[in-house]
Image 1: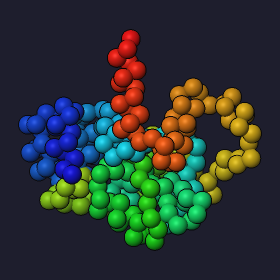
Image 2 (image 1 turned 60 degrees about the vertical axis):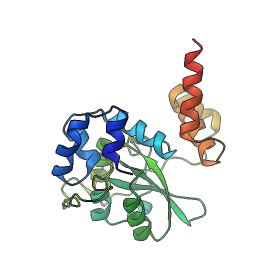
Image 3 (image 1 turned 90 degrees about the vertical axis):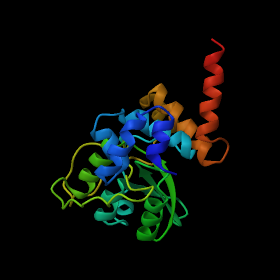
Length: 223
């Protein structure tokens, strides 16, 4: 699916902006955000709804450092995507994408990691920050892939999954895995608890992001 056509169809960007953005090449989502044509969160929420995925906050918690390093920096920056963690089975990874509809990006991450991929969504700005935290802000930057394909503009939407800056050689801070649930609930905001519940339901296949959005619309319409 052409992501620029989708954004224009949904009224996020003007149809007249599409041709201009295509000429810029590189990541389409990054081009939209960098040009100030749409809000980072707005684009991330729309793409998550379209893909039936969830938006995650990359600026909170910690990424699994070893999982991140399964994919070379060049590939992650090119596609504006970052591996967040290994699934418990070890046979797949969770990865945040600026554009979860970019099949080539998902395929490249899967090939580099040597595992299946469960695609999530994050904002462009948060993915960039997470990449800088994991690989270092002074690391070699890559030239984004040239335009010409539907996934030409890679994903750049994420809400942080790592806290604070640290040197590339420092091990990531570990979040205690044995913290009682009631302690977690006390520390989490209502919004975080709601998002955690939604994420669990989606991961279990009980509901999709799109179904959640439809239910929310019906609830709001009753007011």
